[in-house]
Length: 208
Image (cartoon, rainbow, N blue to C red; front, side, top):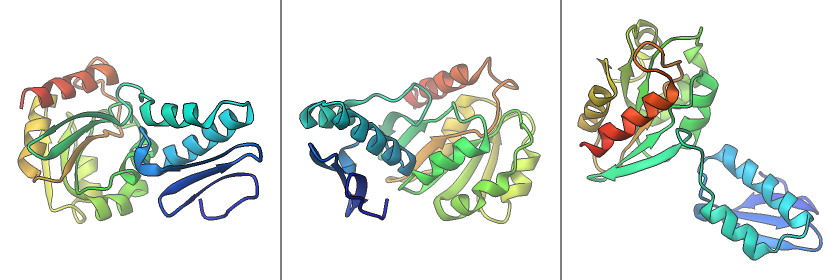
């Protein structure tokens, strides 16, 4: 990210720069379809590979701008009265939620919870303190989440459905905030699987 290789890719002043020798490409990170620092690394790697095998830079730029993420992985759902909703239901462990939080650039209401898989919430504590204004727990047993963040987040509430969680998050949110479903847990206590959880979340957002 910081170093400028002779050949390769780097970021500088919000611009991705790719130089393979035969091809040079510069592009604003704000035009990337996929958000988050981890996806900037992925995009640089894909850009280098594409340029190296001779794909024209216009096609590379077009692909980076229009690429569609997987459903349930940092999937933009909707903006309701200035509040953005993001479905990251595929985040079934703390590591995935760390990457999701790292990519958030607005005050965030985080929807967490489900079947705990021995989670160490300390891994995301710094990001939660920096970015999260409220936590909405969505699961049968939320004690571990409360214990982990009770001193870091002023607002925490328990819910037992996607509909309840979305309504609670929307209540906590103000214009310019984001609501992020990134549970860090498996879904089997309330849902069939993470796909079912994500789809119920999206349906609840559309019903607001």
